[in-house]
Length: 275
Image (cartoon, rainbow, N blue to C red; front, side, top):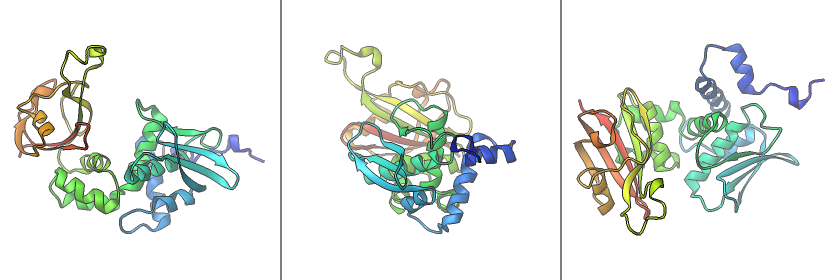
């Protein structure tokens, strides 16, 4: 008899049968198989139903510092999502935790979705979260027929009941042309700790995701008042401008759709190379 600890995960099984696939391709194929099994043909995706197909018996809100947790329960696995997160973020978290059930070791210890740096396991589960919440077979055609901008991201986020940020990331990954999402927030650099009262906060890069050949953009790089920082005053940018101030090498004028969301100065900028 094979014990649980010796059972291969679905990820390991597919990895053995298709060794030429990358880790991300393995994860995407497993998610596509799950979506096909559930017969998902239109948005929004019922992520709780997908979770149930992977043995997750209950999903509850909880006061916890991490976005999600998966643990063994009496009648299957239990998922806890952070009560303070919005519904769209919780839906992504459910997809993320469902991804854990496809990977090695999920039945041996609690699994967490935490903020901050992502190890391999968390990266793979983030792939699953995007694949299950915004499936390529449903989301991809809608991206292909629309203009890549925040108006499109907002519309698709509503259709798929996903956050605008997750939707924009997915749109970049499936866009036909080279594209990039840069996420910024109004804050100080880490080296300015303790001097916040003397130095003004500036709009700085949190992270970027890109498809195609783009130069490196350093984290904490600040945007100029004549550039993306205009969004802090409520301006919506939808024009051809230069973002060379953020990049390690010039790219020239690019099409930028940028907007501030929320009260904490968080800015999303969708960027596509000029025609």
